[in-house]
Image (cartoon, rainbow, N blue to C red; front, side, top):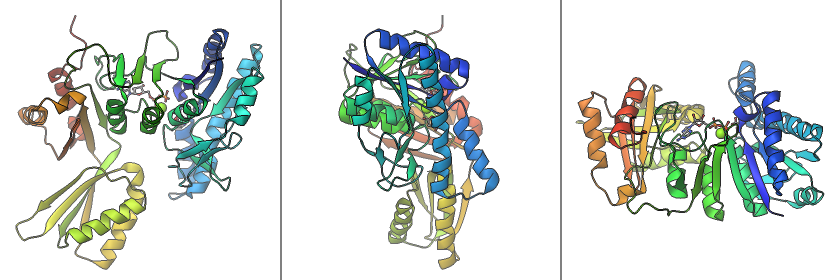
Length: 407
Ligand code: ADP
Ligand code: ASP
Ligand code: MG
């Protein structure tokens, strides 16, 4: 019997009524003749609530204890769904990451899945049970609880699908992948099919709709990922290999915008490339995820260096920079938290030039300052002041045909 892994996100299991609806959807699949493995996120905003509980206690909680706390969220939702399935007459069993031996690396809150021992799971399927698994979590070799980073249940789902050679379906509160987050561009178009490469870029650039590493795993193990709505039967989006009907692809497939980063600027550095190498080396060693970097020489032969970093890594960056300042008092640094990082992505950029020029023109004509910009073969990313974010998105959406045509 074919196995399908279905993942339901936090908003899909936010209340007990919604959990009952999810149970119906799972049962429908089971009745179609599949073995069903369900991966769940925590209910609604549970993970955020747990994080703020920790913050009420301390600004600097131990990463290990954070994972002890955060893994509880998913344990609640899996038990409730399992009960809902039982109540409807179906045999179901829930498992945490530790019970299923989802082995991860040991960096708390950023752990990566190393392997999953699916014996227990297969046994339960053989007994015709529906298996409900806690997403977002695993254990280290020493049996310490870990989490995979925010939004990580998607990655749990694709990893399990890869291990079980199963179909993978991710259900959420939108009915597919759009050219841009519909909350930021209300007339964004739904995409029927998107390739792994483009989706990885869009996901890593701030489209929270799917965890970047889930798409990466899908690509690696060649698992097509279907994204659809939990509460409607509209056809969603399939993330798969490149291909499709259109003879000429569009230049820009999608756009993403993130306000989750800050810009750090180091002023008047006398230092050389060697010290930059040391600085970025230290940030990397601490797993701080430095993204855009720009460097500007001043008239007196010094330099300013700016980089962006996720807000969640700020504490770490501050510690490293403060240490540097102790060694060299001339080092000054400032942080700008009010930025938005906007990106456009498209394989079509490989064969079309002029996209960056168009971005510059649109921003200039509309008095939007570009603070930093980087380009790669299939994407352009630039930083603007947060107040200009939505205006910039609208301009780009219109220019590159990312919206539904007007009626
Ligand atoms: P879940 O809790 O199901 O994991 P998420 O909140 O993580 O759901 O992801 C769904 C949300 O992603 C949507 O509500 C939507 O606002 C947002 N989103 C961001 N970018 C996109 C996009 N390109 N297409 C669709 N949704 C997007
Ligand atoms: N509950 C976790 C989070 O909110 C994991 C997930 O939803 O994918 O980040
Ligand atoms: Mg999510």
